[in-house]
Amino acid sequence: MKKSLWQKDAGHNSFDKLSKNLSADVLIIGGGITGLTTAYNLIDKKYNVVLLEGDKFFSGTTCKSTGKLTYLQDLKYQDIYNIYDFQTAKLYYEAQKDAIRLAKKIIKDNNIDCDLVKSSSITFTNDEKEIKKFDKEQDILDALDVKYYITSKEFDKKEVKRLIMVKNTYVFNPVKYLKGVLKTVKNAKNIKVYENSRVTKIKKEDKHYVAYANDYEIEAKKIVIACNYPFFTIPGFIPFKTYMEKSYITATKVSNTKDICGITSSVPTVSFRYHQDGDTSYFIYLNNSSKICDKLNYKKNYDECVENAKGITGTNPNYKWTNMDVMTNDSLPLIGRISEDDRNVFIATGYNTWGMTNGTIAGKIIYDLISDRKNKYEEVFNPSREMTLLKFKNFISNTILSNAKAYTFNLIKKNPSWYKDKAFVTKIEGKRMGVYFDSEGKEHKVSNICPHLKCFLTFNEVDKTWDCPCHGSRFDVDGNVVKGPSCYNIKIDETKPLN
Image (cartoon, rainbow, N blue to C red; front, side, top):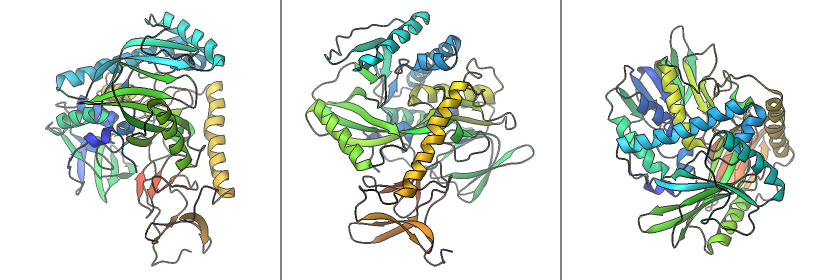
């Protein structure tokens, strides 16, 4: 799969792969911004901590983001207000502000050089139909006592119909940041860190839990699920509270940078920022976002993103990559105890594309819950919060109908028009198979059914992967899982009959 601009800074890092049974007070599953922030908060506390990263560090969602630390997040506050109330929107706003302060403190306290730069943030639209929404967002910002602007010298585009700008927000290099946090975490006496150690199952015992990874067991009193998308359905029922969105991102060398970043107010999202890397300036551009059940012609999506970016910069991008975000049906993250029956299992997901701030505040919320300390955001982000009518409508539209659409499309069109001779779906001995021929003519045959919740897979011509259009699992052409929530491969054992 294509690497992001940030991943060039990952460098060589080597951590042991889990190779023995362990016990811990706290097991953290996932080494992105949430897992590492949680571990950071647990340094030198009374807990014995184990952190497991399923892949190599710096390969996940955090490292493929646009790297923004901002509290102006499209028209998020009215989205929350429309479903809940002003107080809930206020708490979300305060959480984002706290997250920025926490990230800045971590950077300062640990001397992390992560290209942190103060940058104004804007939300803008080119659609006159969106103007009333901007009026409402301004009303909410006024009530929140947020200082904002409706003009911008740094962003003067004639086609823009409306914008809101705030200052005192930031951009940074997420990989450099994670490297700095990981360096501090790995030196802690009470924390053990492993990579290439994918957890496939968690079993509940009387007074503890047992997690299974690499054929070994980790016995833990408390477990933190800090992967992008949880690998289980029950408890929590996360697949019924969320849906997946995919975005295409480019980074192009430009002559200079500007201290401004922005995002559109409507889908398909357009987002941009600048980045200064030594003497090199980059323009980072995200667009062509959609639910992963839509726009399944991945090459076309990439090409459109590249052409749009080229139309702005006048030159071909130097980097291009994709990212997938977990979206919730009520615009609020799912952070906290996964259920009342499993009060020592904590989850953090559903960041709605704003993972840098929500992942940071999640690490603090979960630390407080582990320590039996009160956190002001505990209730608003509670994964078990009550259903509302609008949430239920969104659940039907975003989750049920979208997944049904993806399933039905792949059922009816096993081989859509953009599949070339090199990849196709067929049935062999009654079993649905995906077949790919590489550049040397070698055949790669896999099961075409995702082990997670049995959705049919779509071939990604660009990354050469089989992708699940329901929940985002990805597999290489030989059937190895490269991204969850699936924990299991789709390999075919040629030595055994299919039936």
